[in-house]
Length: 106
Image (tube, rainbow, N blue to C red; front, side, top):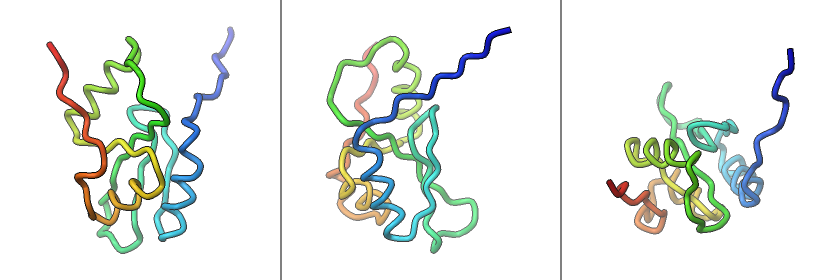
C-alpha cells in the first residue's frame, strides 16, 4: 500500500501573514482545505474563529479550485494578500480593502 505523502504547497505570502497575526495575539492554525488559515484572537468569546484564504497572485482558477471558490463565496471567507490586510480583517477595520470572493458564474 502506498500513501500519498506530499506536503501542500503554501502561498509565499503566508509566512508573513501568520507572523503578523501572531504578533497581535492571534492563534493561527494552518489548514490545507477548505481554506488556508483559521484564526482566533484571545479576546474573542470561545468558539469564535475567522477563516482566511491567502493568495500570493491573481491567477485563473483551475478545476481543483472551483470547490474552494464555492466555499469562499458561500462562507464569506476573506482573501488576504498582505499582513496588513489580514490584520485589518481580524480587527474588523476597513474590510472593504480586503478582497471579497466574486460570485460564481453559472
